[in-house]
Length: 400
Image (tube, rainbow, N blue to C red; front, top):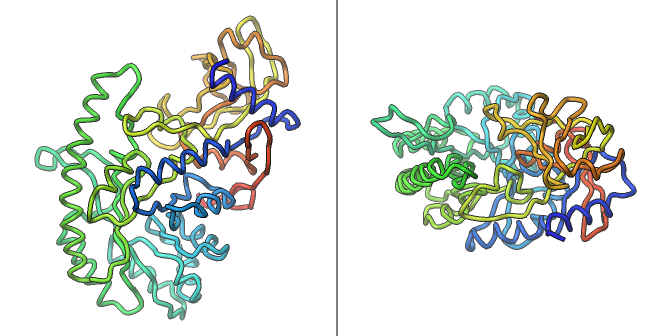
């Protein structure tokens, strides 16, 4: 029996008493992935990206491990909720326009001490001040550095369109604006190199593309390491007691951790290891989060139909944003239908061994987005479900 076949047998036994659709997290794989992130971080703490987990119980589990410290959140409302739930170090990774949230933050000492918000424009400071509604708490802020690689005099950009702050002078200027402004404290710098951390460099069947990606990423790492160090020096000349410099992501942990200027690493997808993280030379993880859809039809030889399954991931639309049939191995989508809103035909010889009610296991393209489809995660150890925990959705929260 192959390892994948053994996993299927375990998951089927563990969930035999449960009807699909359902989602699981294999805790053995989750814990092994967490240990590997810590190993690659080489002594620097890993801040967990909550958008890639979206389950409080699993955030608590990973933060209880040595090597992890703090959360990187994705909305202000989520940040405040997590802080109220007892998480005391929450870095909001994206600027917010949530006036009600800022009013709560500025009025509550516990929230103001636990949450750090992102700014990359003086307009963000203006909006926070306008939303205070009498709240006098000092708001902790972090500046975000644009990490994109610019080539041919800036005519070619590789990387996400995020912060407008690129040069040491630009970040130092905003740092001075924060330092001069009552009610704010600059505590950190963040830089997410998504074109390195979030782009696989070993694309199956595409050797030339893979080589080009590796060359691009090597150049990007060199350029960013030099610029990030200069930015940190410039900002520390304004705010010597800066608390943290955050960088990286699952695909670049060991490279970012090697930079002296970086004090902590961000990662989250590496805990669940969705399909987009299969194509890396820098690490190999174990798929930990899966979902199962039930077989509801057998239209013919070599075909079964499962209920639902059309759960595309965010990003530029394409086949790589679709979940993949994972277990039993060998099933593929019907190219004329693909994964559907209500039903999904699957083709391949393994279909002939599936009966109505059997489970087909899928992997999502991305990590935490799976939790927007399910209100609970069944935690599997060995061949047993040992706990069932709510996702954000299961706790009544859909933050985005």
